[in-house]
Length: 432
Image (cartoon, rainbow, N blue to C red):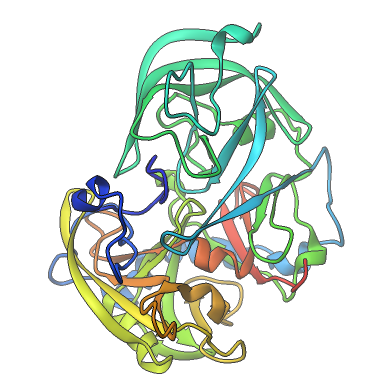
């Protein structure tokens, strides 16, 4: 879930960095925030983890494989809507973010589509600092303020204001009286190419009382299928509401149960970490799938195993405060021009419809130059950090953000009560 930090929606920025406008020489990107505390002693073994999740896996096994059910093009009942996304590369830290315009009360506003947060948050009646725009309540004839105060926390930032409702339109899909958080105070005014945050987590409306925009569409039967898909790689990144553009799919979709449904988040179980489809670490972790994050973060043992195989070097271990908890974060460097045919980091998912690992492009794991003189070593986009994603689970947490999502097409499904909400991943055809 993103903070409202101007450059890094999900990054933890040390206090010193916030006060220093000049980038220090050879500074590493700020480590990612993963909510929680350090894992306790006696963490779950792999077998115990699998046993705890057996019901989820059994439900998945009873369902048809997602890859077999995808027909060419966009499909099923109702409507689909394709939202072209604009990627923005931030030269300060070599990070990517994305945005697209929505309409609220007839006014256009750029938003970040965020699978890691639940609500639509929109800056309103901004007096200063809103360079990407804001919603003018007085200009809308359909705007209603309901009187409730709201405070939305993103770990490293927050938005405060009040709950309101208005007509929201996204790529031809319209929801009237959509509830949202009207933010009168933000830590910053958003990212470099977005102003508001459009939450897409399954627990929509956690702060506003919901339901979310996509939940309203599902309740109204307005979508062709009760899902959305993200394709953040290639030359034409896009969000599809209500379907999947199968022309982008390179391989069969690997379906994964959403272990975070009860908590209102998109959460996958990582069973093994791979390099070029070979297992290098079997640390089991819960992974938040978060399009609002510019980084990946995985257990430290998994990160060490990866970089031992891809000519990685531990640049620094920083003691960071992550959502109020101290944790050691390992930052690595890698070659700036990796081979496209090797060094592909991947993950095997627990309960998946296929044992085949889902791999990232080696290029998406590369950030800015660590050595600006030789330009041979760059910071890696995947950090090592031992933190607990779900308090009390005894399981290390992980975060799969933009570096992972740029390499795959991801389907987020709310459908089929027998299987529960799920996700599916596939490689993306180049040039799409």
